[in-house]
Image 1 (cartoon, rainbow, N blue to C red):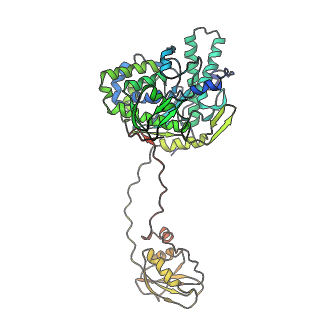
Image 2: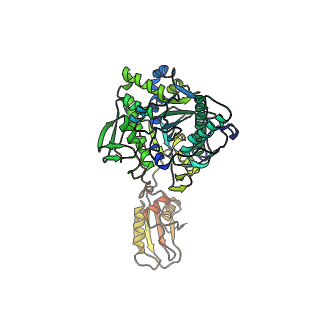
Image 3: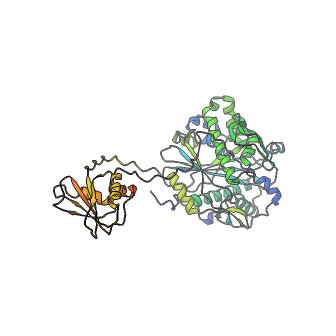
Length: 511
């Protein structure tokens, strides 16, 4: 297995190729930011349904004709694997940069604020080289990382703040077309986010997909909603959620509220990530198993969602990729969250502490190919039966019986039990005709005492003489079996398995 701490990426652009370091514009007020922080843009997760399933590859003939692309990939993974960065943004514009109408923003329960952009959903989907089951790693938006040009900051600041810096620079350089400024500054922001994710996870990003609020809202409407399950009623003024307990079908604004909520949840933003993962699993199930793709009306609506709300990297041959990843379907994708430390307050607000080495080791454990199984070895022959006579010369009353009990627990038949003249050292004696194999097995069960050949020992038996030096080592059956291979004890119990990841094969009830 390769060193998990060594990023599996091709070189990312040098710092000179990235936007110049400039002071970011003033942040909006704390009160106004609160609502915007809930604009998760979880449509990024939903785009998996369209981009990672070979069953819908014919759909892309229509999709590719109008999809928006961006030139942001300068590297990628070193092998045949594919790593896709899915980003959900709360942009108040569509994929073409046109502002959303006020009535649409109202329906999304989203306030309008020029220049406000948050990449609040960040997921890396790893597709192995063999095209088998995928793993999706959620990156909490508050994870504190080092961002070129910004220093240490929340990872979700990489896109908007770099975009703002690049936009200011482009205007200073004389670029007058607002759409061109938006397009080029957005490209710089996306590249900064890609670089930060690569540095954190050690995975080279091969493809990029970005979806906005409108896309998420419209997708849930287009497929007729999805099934989720809540353990208790959920009501929260900040996210706008107001849902009962139990299984239910949600879409549109209710679906947005479901994945936005973090207040009132035990894990805060980490619990919200669980909501996102469960919801994506539900979307995958709905599209892949309910005939959605065979319904011309719903299929047309999905294509419209992609055209209006999805941005992908310009080098992505999604038709070819769909064929390569044809095995990824419901039940063949697991959802995990990278390990994080506790919260910490900084000049950038509350952040989550993350250790890149821990993150990369975690990612490597879940992405490295499984080792080839070892060929099954021929079963070892059963040891020959051993009968051990035990004589106590230690001066400690009852020790011979206890030693005989230990031998019995390790598959050795106790023979005669009695006393012997007092002696200093313990030993196991064997006959020349039998050899020392049985004696060494007995000695191991008793903690590794010495063995010796003796003409006084009859064939087919061994003699155990317990001396004053006997310390009791090996009196537990497990210790003896571990050293001797005895049948009286099995291997140490394995630790309890970790909680299984969320899978696209099922949708559990959650908080």
